[in-house]
Every structure is written in C-alpha cells, then in structure tokens.
Image 1 (tube, rainbow, N blue to C red):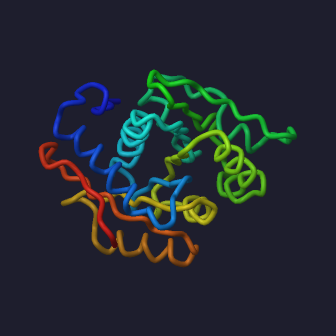
Image 2 (image 1 turned 90 degrees about the vertical axis):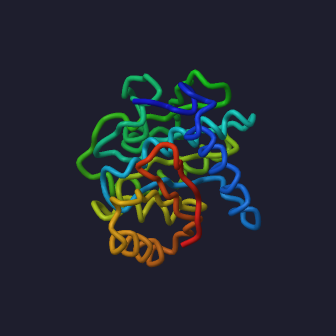
Length: 217
C-alpha cells in the first residue's frame, strides 16, 4: 500500500493532501471536528488511502493524530503503515475490562498512532453501536488532537451511519468517473437520517496530476 505523502512528498498528489488538510480546517472552523469518519458510498473508492494520507499530513503539522480502523469486516488500514492486524478496535469492543484499555501502535511518523481493526467480527454493528464504543471514542478524544476513523462503505452496511452519529463529522470520498451520483446522494441521505454532520465531499480524480479536493455537498 502506497502512502504518497511519505514516498513522494513533493508530488502534486501529496500537495493535494496538504490542501485537503487546510480546506478541512477552514470547513470546520465554526464547529471544530476532532473525531472524523472517512467513508465512501461504495467499495473501491480509495477511502482508506485518503484517510491514511490525511492522517500523515495532519500529524506533520505537529498534531497528535490517531488513525482508527473501524471497518471491522474488511480491515486494511494496518497495511498502509506496514503493521500486522493485531489486537485492535474489534477486540477492545468485545472485552469488558474497565477502564477501557486501548492498544495503540506507533507509526513511523511523529505524532501518529494507529488502532488496527483486530479480529474480524460477525456482528460489527452491535459493537459500533454499543455504549462501549462511545467510551472508546471519548478516551481516544482525550488522547489526541484529531481522531480519524476509516469506516466501511456507506451503501454496503449500516455500521458507518451508526459510527457517524457518534462523531463530530464525516468526509465522504467519491471518485470522479466512478462513483455514481445516485450513490453519493443516497449516502448523504443516510447521514442526514442518522443526524450525522457531513463536513464535505473529498473528490478524488483518477488522474494523479489532478489530485483531490474538498467541496460542500
């Protein structure tokens, strides 16, 4: 898995992520978003890549950032940081220790920690909708300046809408030429019904030179 913000920091794509970071800051200026879900309408729309690179550029500003794998069916975030999918969020939510113990793994970027998905679970919706998940979010918030959640595609499962309702905001990743407009609209409608705050839509272009951006929706 390639983190362009690390492998080629002077590239147009890396600069686009830094611009996204800046635009996100201004988009949430009136109501700062400390816990942010990154998702997409459907699978294969590069949401995990966007989330991982965004975590890197946020940490590069000196912020303490925690990147969390919240797709408990198909965890892949750990691969971007060269980690094993060891004990992670799914395990924490399945346990009953009090207080909650969260296993964070240090990435090779100063200020950035990763919470993998851990063991794959058959009922992730139950875990993500639990009061224990609310406790985990609160604890993560105390431990970092920004917490980013890599969430499952909106139209595939109901997990993400539940998670979004517990956080400060959502970034919806769409790919130009791939994401269907109807799917993007349906994802927005789901977030509205969940009373989740849509911060903006990350538009990802297939051409690397064109980069990506943040827009209202």
